[in-house]
Length: 330
Image (tube, rainbow, N blue to C red):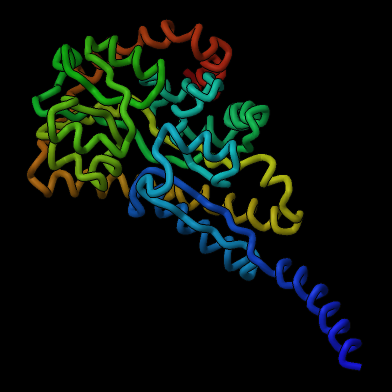
């Protein structure tokens, strides 16, 4: 009788183990390289909240801020290998991956403000670009704005000529390299997490960033001047490992897709305000002098950088550049 009871108990345990395992939450590791109080950092936390609440605990989103898991150059490989499931890398990161068409976003003065930007990212051109990621084992879920970039340095940079000879940190992008060389500056590719120290020690002289990145990373503490060139856009694509995403239960995937759609809208609503607030914070610190270009100075920046459009056609693709022109009415 005791043996029979033991057999029944063992059978019961075998039945219960899969049931317990089935209740284990699906873990999504979401890694990014910026601070929690940036637009991207806040949006990642917003998605986490929606995903966990709406799946009633069936999904757990672990958000890793400030390169806690991976630096710029490491995170894309980690996603493809399945070490993380979700990223929101800057659009410049897709060039080194082999999808160089994304570097169109790096072309200076190709986007004149948020309205023009959203005609691209929320329309067929943006969808066309995301579709190019699938052969790489990646699915794109949408675009998150950060903002338009300003130049910073430890000397006044009112005109393009002031950039001559400066060592300027850039992301790994052939277009950004061409942009800096058009200004006679010396581009220096560097991981985002290393920029503050590089500026502090003089390894580089300056950089380009939206105000929110500059402020939250405290770069204004080691940069005496900044100019509101708004010459280029910095944004992100939210991406997931394709195999992981397609392997999710359909109901879970549907909930997460809706949560991400709402998060995309949330991020883009707060991004501009965060940048305006960050710029105000930089001004209030008294450490960085902010220069607003005159109309003549702005024209000089545009004239200096417009040739880059033609120069990078062979890299980015003439067709995608023309798509941007058509979408934005240029």
